[in-house]
Amino acid sequence: NVSVQFSGQMRVPGPRTGANITALIMASHQGTKYFIAGDSHGGIAILTRNGTVAAKLSVPGNASVESVNAHVGHVVYVAGGEWGYIDLERFEVRRVQCAKFEGHVSAAIVDTQQTSRVLVADDLGVVWVFQVRDQRFCKIEHRFSALATRAPVQLASVRGFVLALDQSTAARGRVSSLAFNLSHSGKKRMDPERASSAIVWRRWGTPVRDWAVHKRYQQGDLMAFLSADGLEVEVVELLMHVYTPQQGDTLGNFKLPVFAVAIVLVLGYQYVKQQGAFDPGLMEGS
Image 1 (cartoon, helix red, strand yellow):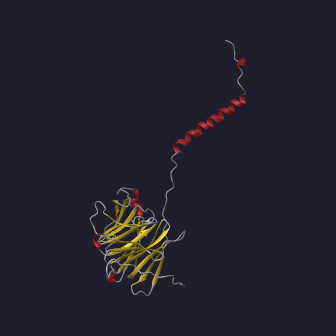
Image 2: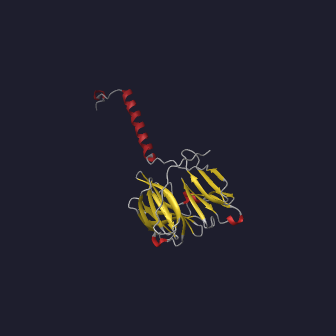
Image 3: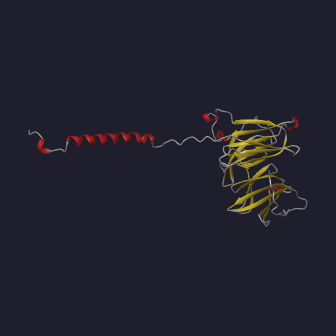
């Protein structure tokens, strides 16, 4: 059972007449929580919890804001095939261009394990991993197989994995959700960690209107799917764990000879102690 209690309402200011809200999310920065709304005319409104307007911004080119994603104060947006950051400290929009990436971005989210990573899907459905420094400088860290997914693709992030919803086959009455292993990211082609498939699992289901991922502490994360007719919700538990290799002992090669010398010294001391103290008077004369 679910109980809902009305808390309040607010009006999102539109920078232009006739703009429709196309994206809405909650984010926090330095203890302050914000509502961030994007509209069809490229406007971004940032409001506090009580409805006070903190800032009204616009994305470059005033393209329709397709999505907004936030994690631990890092907020990214997608608009007009481009992506960038929404800075909640300076209240500014910053477009990011990644070197050697020439596609159009259709989805972008912040990696929940490493916030300097941004996970991106392009207009062909290919999933990319970008490494970003200072929310300005970007480089390609990895590109998953172009055969794994087809547009349109939506993304979600859980620790160590990228979740993707591939709706390219929705017209044929089915869609697929899958998980990419992020341990492949940043590794060279011949690295042993890339010997196994990057796709951990793939699950087929009926077309959906929307989906969401809920992270849980010390329990499996959840995925929820809203059916295309809006009448059913399917909840799936993720039974995946990130393997963390044990840290090697960097002093291991140094400890062994130290222990050997210590044992020799102890045995030598015991031997001398049992033989008694050295008496020069016991020396034989020449």
